[in-house]
Amino acid sequence: MDQIQHTHVEVRGVKLHVAQIGTGPKVVLFLHGFPEIWYSWRYQMIAVANAGYRAISIDFRGYGLSDHSAEPEKTTYMDLVHDVVALLDSFTIHKALLVGKDFGALPAFILATLHPERVAGLVTLGIPFMVPGPSIVQMLDNLPNGFYIKRWQLPERAEADFGRFDVKTVIRKIYTHFSGSELQVAADDQETLDLVDPSTPLPPWFTEEDLSVYASLYEKSGFRTALTVPYRSFAEECVNTDPKINCPSLLIMGEKDYVLKFPGLEDFIRSGQVKHFMPNLEIIFSEEGNHFIQEQLPEKANQLIITFLNKCSI
Image (tube, rainbow, N blue to C red; front, side, top):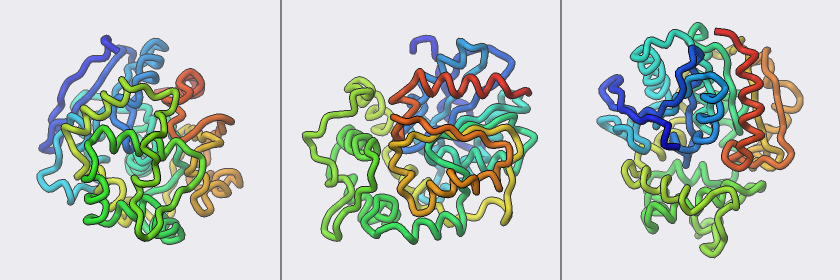
């Protein structure tokens, strides 16, 4: 971990925290989800650097060590996309390989749709093709009202839920909650974070040291932007009505990822419907993988990612 270098780069009026390792001519840019941060890619960054790539991982604006927008509640997915393009420009990187996890896959999909000339290949973990707009809104409408996404779209209720605990406890509860394979739904008089028994141990692959790193980063940023993007920005329309991503692509899904229980999502993947949007997509299911497969099974994830990257050309 000590060999990873940290800097801040100013783009579009905010300073983004950037972690880097490696000096290869091919650049791999990692985009985190929630409650993740640049650190969630620690194993992958070192592995791809050892494989000859330059690895870059950022904290999105409003996350971790990066600045918030002037008005955090007005942050959008397109802000994140424009930030990535500006960051690549600042490093004079004309084309990169993107790796996105959870909601971090959405800016990657948008970028590959709007600026295909900047993307040499695309890997996503835990999320098949989707972009903000009507399709996501429709899917969310079919979820129970007590499901975490719907709850966290409600400003007063979400902030009150999080505000009862210190940051470390919030991260502990969310990581534990999202590591399961089933959808858990809160009752009307129950909050999302109450679904996690305080005595439940951390997953065996997530240490107390890892938790402390995450907590220290979110103590700096808080959750103002994190609750806005992704959860309160899904209605934003970013691309045309029939987007296509033609670059080589890989989707890695854990068989035990709770996301597969979203209405229609598993069939969307297994039936091949997703390839309507990504015709050059390879799909790999990992039998034991959960929603945090890159941290849970880092050697497996590294092998899949590097094998794919080695097939891409810039």
